[in-house]
Image (tube, rainbow, N blue to C red; front, side, top):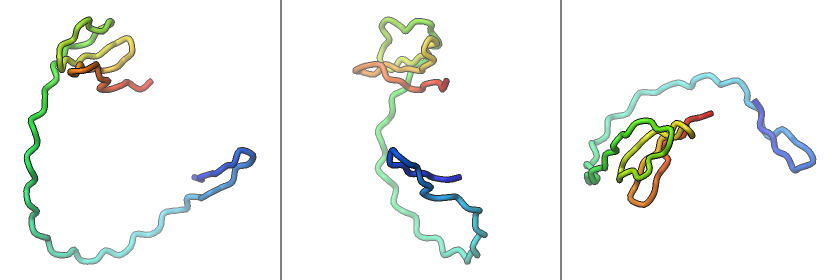
Length: 91
């Protein structure tokens, strides 16, 4: 594989990938360090309510409703402000 760089008029090879080198020698593992302190607990999350699949987007989804919109092949959820894209299907 090669990496190239260009200035608009010409393209030059910047780097070439060679064969991998041999694995270096592994030394003895050092002693296990002390256990760190526990972090501060986080806030509880909010669950999503799965509505299913729709050919048309729901007219008035409720807060945290999630669904699959078959026309655009997107998974969406409703937040307090707007709809958010959860997952987009690759085409």
